[in-house]
Length: 378
Image 1 (cartoon, rainbow, N blue to C red):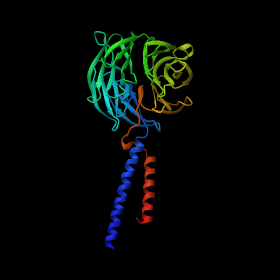
Image 2: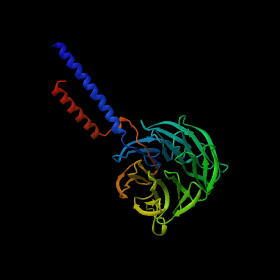
Image 3: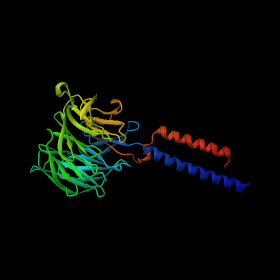
Image 4: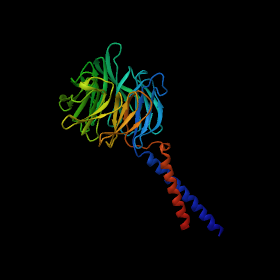
């Protein structure tokens, strides 16, 4: 009889251990079910959120944590596997590297001059960072090796006021670089040399390339968007109707739409401090709808499934837009002076990100299984 009871006790311990392991795996699965958004908080000297990155869970549109980075964070990009976030610190001339499993800075990379734009290669091995001009008026791109988190190469672009945003083609073979006071440069990534230049509009501020790699959309500061045929590197269209003072741009995962953030837009394209999103149909290159938002819209990013668009409103909050209805469905209040935003792919996050409701659900499951075990006397 005693041996039987001991055996039952051992079985009970084993059962509980099995349930604990199952619960842990479920926690990890739940935590990694949705991508997270990373928003830079440029801040002001009189606010506590200065020089940080805020993290939002895109499943619940809730604030997760704040990460301290360098001074004046602006641009942000995430590796394709979602494991690392690269944040540009404009005042420090550095790049902060964040591990997304812990949301901690694991490295700081020095670049020569104030970083402006950032893009990650499709294979995740390289990060391209554009910079301001140096004392001699030269502009350049720093290439960071993501395995070492060190600058391994530099590409000289030319004498311009400054470089701007940057984008890599889906096949990783070409890089498109914007310049203030100059043309858009096209770089062959195999040789790191400029193979073409394209004249676009004035003060280009953002660029995206369609998922099929056939077109590049350049958001120009003065009320238009240039469309580049990447096969010929010629501007084939200019979208100007219902485009304001452009500050950010994103493309849908299926390539059907391009979303343009207008920093300030009023009647007859007169700046009024208001903000909205212009939605461009990439088949017709026409604006089909405008979505009104808060003041000073800036950075913009879309979820991997294309269902939600996140817009960083410079002096206020983050707006969430349902892309099927083009309506604002949520507003997240975090930090201040939001300039950059990026959304990662699905990945396993720290299990501490599991919400209380999810954890309570797991406890209910464990309790039911425990009662069933006792009732069947297994």
